[in-house]
Structure formats: C-alpha cells, structure tokens
Image (cartoon, rainbow, N blue to C red; front, side, top):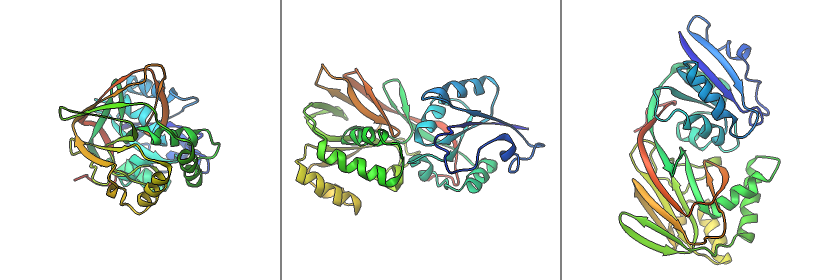
Length: 299
C-alpha cells in the first residue's frame, strides 16, 4: 500500500474543488493507497507539515498550490527517495508547466496515480533550494508588486510588470563570476533558471532542461526606460536576446556579489519575494536532487 500525503495551500485553491480525503478517495482506491491531507495556514507552514509527513513515512508528498508551496514542500525532500507530486492550483505554476502537468484537477491526479517519477536538478542559492528560478533586479520588483495585489491573475501580473517598468531603478553594482571570470555591472536584471518556462507560460530561458545538469543564467545590463519598453515588446514575441545588453550563459555554478552594504537585497525565489542581508550569493546545481512525478520522462 502506497502512503500519499497531500499538503494543500487553501488560499491558492480558490475556484477548485476542496481537496479532502473524501474527494481524493474517488481517484485513489483504499486497497492500494493510504491518503492523508494537511492544510497550510501561513507562509512556511508547508515546510513544517512536510517534515511531519516525512517522519510519518509518506512515500509520495503532493504539493497542492503554486510555485511557492512547491518550493516549501520540495525543499524538504532534497535529497530523499520520497517523490514530489504536484497539483498546480496556484497563480504561476512554472514547474508544473515544464513537467507537462495540466491545471485540470482530474488529469493532475491521474498523473500522480500513475507514479511516473523522474529525477530533476535542483538549484541552490546559499542554503536555499529553488526548482524553477531566482531573480534579482527587475524580476524581483515585479514579484513584489504582484504580491501586494489581492488577486493573483495574469492581468495582475501584467499590471505589476507595467508598474515596475515605470518605477524600477537599480543603483547597486553587482560582481558576477562565471567560469572564473568576473563582470562588474549595474544590471537591469539577473535571472537564473532551471526550467524553460516561468509562470503564465512566459520564458526567458527557452533552452533550459530540468535534468541536464546546468542552470541557465540571463544577465541584462542597465537600460533606460525607453529601452525597457522595447525589451518588453521583444520579450512578448520571444526575441529579447537580440538586444546588445543581453547575455545568456549555461552554468553549473556562479557567484553574485552585491556592492551596496546598507540595504537588504531584494530577490525572488520560485515566484516568492524575499529580502536578505547577504552580500554574496553562491549559486550551484544539485544534479538529480529531487524525485518528481510528471506526465512524461524528460529528455
């Protein structure tokens, strides 16, 4: 009998059926599965619940929410043999899209029941894990604006982007070391991704593969406001790489040092806004660090 625990973010699940043991029993026969459902109540609570589930010998732990919930649950499963399942009921769902997990509850549950497991790479920034992406600069500013809104929809994300275009300024120098070479600049954004898609099916790293042992790093140096609008148009049609300020790297590790010593550094990790007082960030990849259930084997 397979022990399956569901960690549910009830806020992310608005508009979806209530995920209860009674509801799930329609999909998982009692003769083959033992189900436990837990509900997170605050940011960080999914980690607490996942650690409890590990002690309770869960063999599959399913994150029901967006990329933030997936990050909390998945971070506890690195590196274990416990498989991560995903029910994408959040706003962005970048990792789920990359794994071809549909938004349909019926189809997502069928994928978990089939237990098609693959080992994917895990990004690490200092002591934190990420599965989709991290971002400094403009992308972090978008997420900050997005989180301040009550509604988490595509139009809200676009509104947050427009707000950031008008308001974002970076006066802090970054020293970025890649393959032993350092570059000092005042970047518009620094973006590191493990997946080929962000939330809402947008992408800056179309070459990224979840299990290739590499992270995809995008740096866009400082832009004036007119050039930012131009970049936004290029981004919408998928040719943002054509501007001269853009550079793309595929790396196993990188180091980012931030010059300003007085401010907390804003960044986003898997679509969640954070600030941190660190001035140096070591970015690495853990090859095959997480077992995850997806709709197909990655290549």
